[in-house]
View 1 (spheres, rainbow, N blue to C red):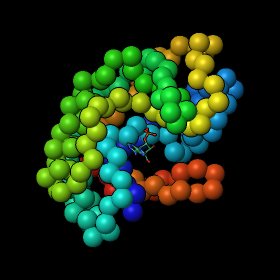
View 2 (spheres, rainbow, N blue to C red):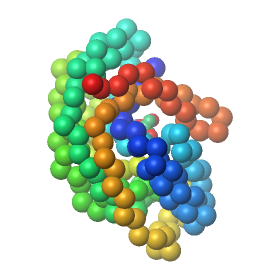
View 3 (tube, rainbow, N blue to C red):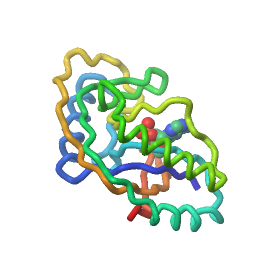
View 4 (cartoon, rainbow, N blue to C red):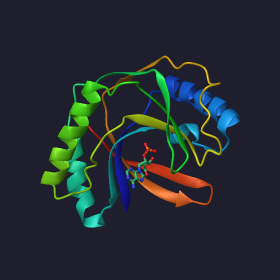
Length: 169
Ligand code: 2AM
């Protein structure tokens, strides 16, 4: 099954990010990520054998990050898949340290796929037709976080859907 580790936004922030996604959709076209799917990916694991999921779940339940507050102050794009995202102008040190620590653990569990760079972001649009961010308003949001979620990704006709399998302590 296709898995990833993410941080999910608290409800109020989820709605605010959804409002940003609406603004971006009006400006750039493409597919808006539904509110319930908005997340910050920390580690994309790809296809993982079912037999490994129990060990992953047990590991995650023993992880207890200190948490932090991620400041979102920037729009961004990934050109090739036409992604428009919200994130930080500079990488958040606590998230960067957490991502590195998670990959150390994941590699000890026998999982691969550590990316060469990590750009913390929340994908708001996919397949945008225009990557025109200049008319969008400035972003100033704070995201208090602590818990991590192991999510399973399904592909449905209208895009990906996610199911939470486990959470950190
Ligand atoms: P993103 O939207 O935060 O960029 C679940 O599929 C999530 O994992 C996606 O939302 C995407 O995160 C990330 N993801 C999907 N495919 C990926 C890949 N091939 N490499 C890295 N991350 C990927």
